[in-house]
Amino acid sequence: MRPLPTLALMAACALASAPAYAKKVQPWPTVYVSAPIGKGWSISGEVVGRADREHTGPSQLETRLQLGHSIGRDLTLWVGYVHVVSYPPLGRVGLEDQVVEQLNWKAGSIAGITFSSRTRLEQRFQRGANTTNWRVREQVKASVPLGHHVTGIVWVEPFIALNQTSSVRSGFDQLRSFAGISVPLSRRVEIEAGYLNQFLPRASGDIHNDAVPITLSIKF
Image (cartoon, rainbow, N blue to C red; front, top):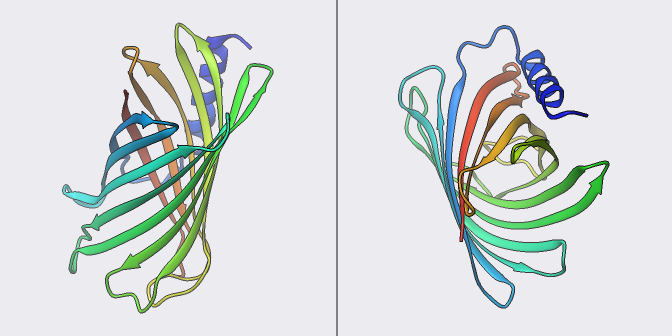
């Protein structure tokens, strides 16, 4: 498939999946930095901002620090710590700390399309919760070269809560679906942008958030 028709198809799919009743698209800016530290080990840091569509201030700020080790040509195991601060329109600020175990797998290529997965197991320590929440996230990703060093990206990521706490129900927690492109700015820097739909099933009513994640990645 030629690059321009492929890109047009991806854009059409993303727009078609956007709910018509969306109030406002949320910007999700991200800065990601990673570096090897020798003998198969790597470190990475990430800062993610998520702006709420109901008010002008940030709704969430997430900071992530991870240590990774290659356990094969296509597998990398990561462990890390995440701190999340949430700013609701009303009420006190929410705080959450996580311990995270993560497995990245480069699954291979078929017909020029590269497939990969990212499996995360999170232990979530939330302010006001009566116990630790365990959650698993499974991201499946497809990447296709579009020409001129541009890569088209599509991924889906379901979140499953493995137990129930006073603030989290067990079971299906959310689904994130993304379509976009990645463009290198230099040998070590690239930018990724696209459309993301976040589906949150809730007892009070399902929620659909429409976001534009823009990620600046710096790899040393």
